[in-house]
Length: 259
Image 1 (cartoon, rainbow, N blue to C red):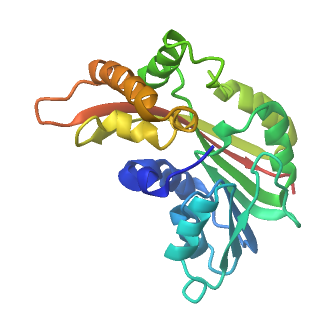
Image 2 (cartoon, rainbow, N blue to C red; image 1 turned 180 degrees about the vertical axis):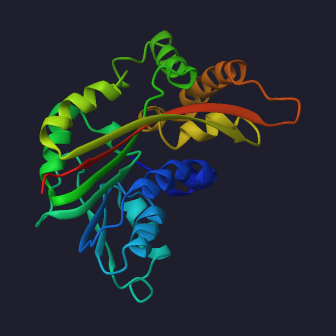
């Protein structure tokens, strides 16, 4: 899929808040190698570098546009311990074990978590940490209405939307607990307060709507967005103060590799 850094950053504060919450739960480590897997525009990667200043921190992403933004915002002369690497996060593996493998709102785009997560834990050095946040809002109106609009407009043969790409909290625990020294898992529902016209549509333009935007164009895309946007306005009505409330549930996990 294509990614639009400017669109993604329209809601930078609420998008990055879960990543900051995850980072706050990562214990202090004598880290030498840190990776942000699915780093996007690199804001959280830079914060990881500041948190672990003795480490070599690498942001990994498969989007050249996102990485170009990350490099422009974090030049090497100002961030000497920070670098960027273009790779498919589904198959990426480090050259050496990592002290911290961090991923915020990226792994939901990768299939087969039952294979993926044990493999990622194996990339972590003894005593190191795998720290992950993934959305768990795929039954929310924003996603349900997107699938419904695709189906009703007979676009399912052209546009593929994944219904529920993440496991339950219990599923991740059962998967990782036998392989880890310690596993911590929790879920949080954020109530994002969005401003502006059609803010939920603007939010999903950067993420869930990407498979549609990569296939449709012109009047066909306009008609789709009109239909989907109307449904979103009904599901997420504007409040009396002009804001729109957007509940968003997310799952967090920390897994420590055996010493």
